[in-house]
Image (cartoon, rainbow, N blue to C red):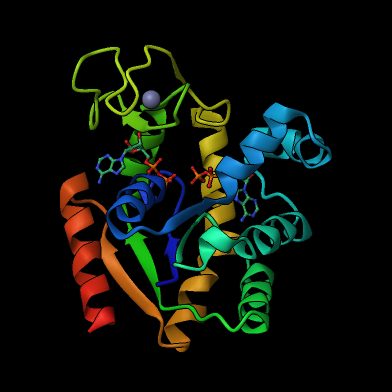
Length: 218
Ligand code: ADP
Ligand code: ADP
Ligand code: ZN
């Protein structure tokens, strides 16, 4: 099954992509994670993306399209993938249609997360992750079971994203409404769109997604 998770920054896409990828044996493809890895490694792409990401603007389409094109062609994506944070513009969506068609792959479902803006800011402000394995947490909504210790790998080091601050969040939300929200109509018109209540607690959102996937598979 090939899925897209669509929603504003902080909506819970990464959290749910990780859960569904694990339960369904799908590959999670997060362009944000891939770009942050490129920035950290100091690659050419990383050098181009760094300042743009820190401002909360979108990285140029051709860069992210190239990254996704290469990644989707790899053998582990044959079983299916979850796109988390891609596409984010209409040209990216059109490029995705083409690269899937070229590989005889299809898109099964686009899941739109509906979350209030005030909740997004709260989620982003409290977000942190394991520095070793990347598992995601929240100061209020998802603390590690043992304080200071990662549930997934036992590491005691955590990190916060440079762009997860109140100033940048506004810019990222603006980019979402201007560039990404039109994709809701794009995928609705293609008959691929389902929306979920992203305001519900994490486990309930996971169950709602599982129900949608069961409907699509039936
Ligand atoms: P996105 O990938 O859409 O930017 P994340 O999955 O990183 O969003 O979630 C943003 C923050 O909100 C994280 O700290 C995460 O733990 C927390 N979070 C995710 N889903 C929920 C939810 N349903 N309720 C409360 N907090 C959530
Ligand atoms: P969030 O879900 O919290 O918005 P991401 O991790 O998905 O964060 O993205 C972080 C940043 O990486 C974005 O603000 C943007 O600069 C860049 N980025 C990620 N995916 C894309 C994309 N598909 N197109 C353009 N820029 C992207
Ligand atoms: Zn960890």
